[in-house]
Length: 152
Image (cartoon, rainbow, N blue to C red; front, side, top):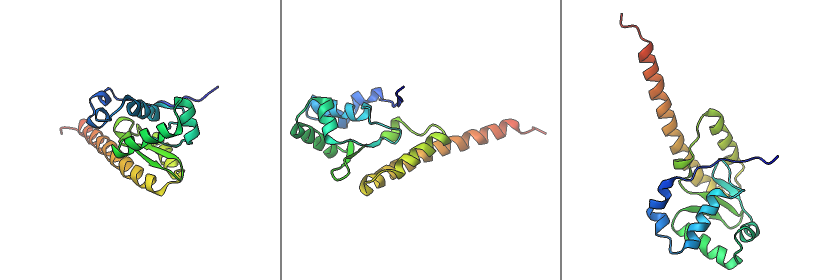
């Protein structure tokens, strides 16, 4: 039985200035591929050999590299040529950690990233997303505490 990974694609993608500024439908398709391919995981960062992407898309290596460079220039992805790792920028705005177990799983994935440059970008984005989750949790705890206080 195969393991399915769930990831969200926000409908707001179609209104994204970065996404819509991409010059070709191929660049937009590649971005969607990166967000939804079978290599995707909860960290939004994964190893993707060029040969796999080329085979999946039916493109030449040159076409793939050209469109990938467009996505990098638009800051939609971070990519490391040496490790062949892709990170979907702003991943945690759409797919933030949902709970402690999910956050721990993402942290373990982050530890597996070979690229120092990508790991640094990812850690900043993950930390920002986690701050929001912690702030929401703290607010909820305060509200619950207020509800449990006696008026006397």
